[in-house]
Length: 334
Image 1 (tube, rainbow, N blue to C red):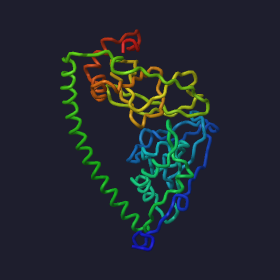
Image 2: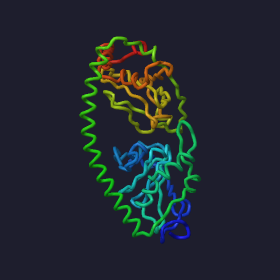
Image 3: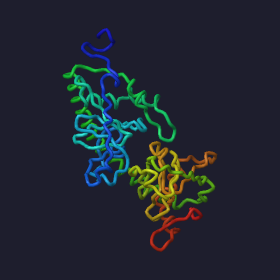
């Protein structure tokens, strides 16, 4: 070990001393006909760092300032840093200002920097330093204080190659496990549907949960993350960010983690979900009806959630839905 407590040849560094936070901004709307490779937070998969769902966007469709990046950068999502969104882009483009383009010093490979930013140590640091309740973020001034070890370049590359091999093996194992879980889940859903459908004691929703609406008063220049709900109980997802100006007169409501969320349009598709921790502080359309389970009920909240997202509940919703052009379930029906 060296005198600094690190292996021989390793040295300590901080984001402030070894990394350039390269916030070179651009306003795409100034070039409305230009096409941009636009990366927002929803385009970076949490934990894996894969780029998902992005596509070139015309400058006319992007209203606010963005940061430029290239294939030498590491993109770090500072909003909700516990989601662990770190991307190594292989192309040039622009990104949301909630993403910091980072340029490592010559003695630090960007792959090594990505490993450090995905580490449990950094996650612990970020959770301790992040500020805000609805949209917690890591301030750049705090981010610069983070310290991490830097091995020699050859050692960095060796470690990165080893980690890549481990991740590839884990991916193969995860795919096999996912297939097995999918089959087990389908069998359990079938059993659960029959069990719930045949059971006595169905209760009105308002006896086990409270209808809660949290209206949002959008500000024109503020960006809002909108939540979507997938059909047939397949969870939530994040829609593209919109400014208050883009929302216009659209009515939106705050979503909190743990909410039971019903999309009352196309009710027969069973667009029902439980809001996840990453949905905290997102907004939902007025078509999203939110309930908070009653903590005083003797049944576990999970049972209530399973009951309202079961195939049997979907069938009940389908029978109750009405409307000429689309199936809509009213709050009263719920």
